[in-house]
Length: 443
Image 1 (tube, rainbow, N blue to C red):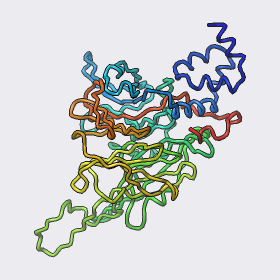
Image 2 (image 1 turned 45 degrees about the vertical axis):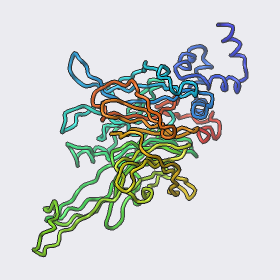
Image 3 (image 1 turned 135 degrees about the vertical axis):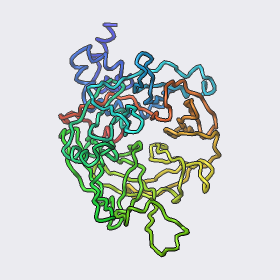
Image 4 (image 1 turned 30 degrees about the vertical axis):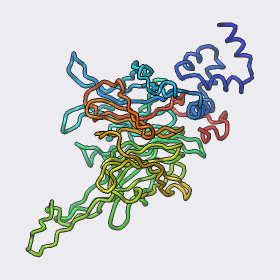
């Protein structure tokens, strides 16, 4: 073994990168101890970007990694504990119908209490954290108040971001609720800089019986400067309405972030009315405003927001963001206007807004209660969902179902995402002199 390591050390640098970039993160973390030069190589941002690119585009790989956030019950304390679990799924054509190839052994990762993330829901009393977004192997965790934590489960690395003054002031507005409306995380393809963006609730002003809701505020954290800065949100509203994100998972794709959202009236007249009586003959006019669903897009490079309409303008009961051949997509299903499952893909030809293309329409395989995540590539379209008390994996194209051995309580509060193993550090890189150009872009 020592001879083989010595021979590998003598290889040219580019050859070593090609060999090591095909190894799993756990092996690379061990190999950092072989030699100082190996430690420097594996820890460098250019190698991390190359490793991500290989992990994403390795056609020889026969596994898909799914990351679950689930709740497990501690029988000693009778308390629920939040666990992040990596689950490897075989999707080789030779084992499509063989459930024995589903590896029941998951690697669990517990979020340290020192991260200060867990908070109790004011209604249920259950502690919870949310996966807000993921990019190149890094997941972004938040309590939707002041705390944001970056984590790379593959190398078990955490980074708790500093609390910003803007987040503190927003927390004062909603002391008992969620001051953060949404959080996203991704990479600027031009500068190769990783950033966190946070959208915060703003103050509500009451004038007599009228309520005025001020536009959302937003800020960005850079892993290069390691500081927060407030940014403009001009595109998230006009004279009469504001655009608000829903507290759902954000999707990163090609330098942009996407959230589900809705358009909301900026001013509510006479808030004492909570409903409209259609039989009211008094002649009094009661103002009604119907929320309109929207998609909020954020260009990480220019740090600007954009608003996109949902495909066809339908109202969908189930909407799940995902990736389809490396493009942003949305799976819509189960409503009166559209009883089948539709996969819509954003072409991005016209910029961040682009246009929607319906690339797949099929009849539902099973009545799924809680869809969690989906991804489409290489002739497959995989959906992870909760059906009653079990977790299932459904291939839209082949209409085949598998029951995943995922245990836990309150499965409807679980989260899932299709994960890319990487060695990208959540601490950031301050020395960018050794980067190989376009590596992140290729990733």
